[in-house]
Image (cartoon, rainbow, N blue to C red; front, top):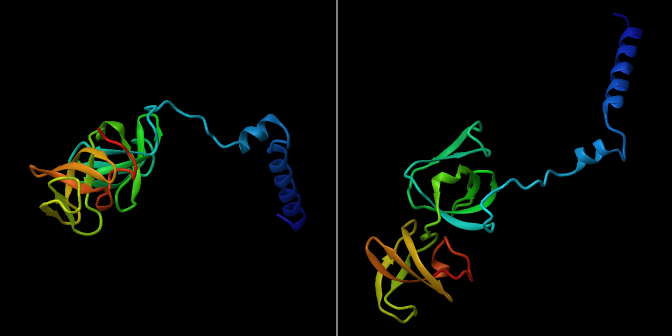
Length: 179
């Protein structure tokens, strides 16, 4: 093929591509540029919110569907996670270390749990810093949240109940009441 034929072929390709693009101001151009904010039916619950893993093995996927590959697997039942997005029956979650991905809603429960995220935290007999310490909780210890009011939450860890300051755990928002 000669140079002239190559130039004509290239010019034809560019013209064809330009012709197939929607014109500015047309409905097609508007639809292509508009973000797809169509809300699929989800739970109707507020986002973000906390939940817990229902199983000892939870596949975390790269997208909202079983056709997306598994990125990693959680292996800790009752781990608290934050739901940050919903798409149909899929929830985008984030863990206490900031990792995120998609899981099926059936793998989550509304049961509230927490994890000690940074340093050792004290479990007190009553909701006061001066109260008797009934246990010291090491980082990555999981527990169940019973209730929260003010700066304190009543929790249960391995059969021991007590009060812990919200700032010492991850799994509850700063001013969120839990009854």
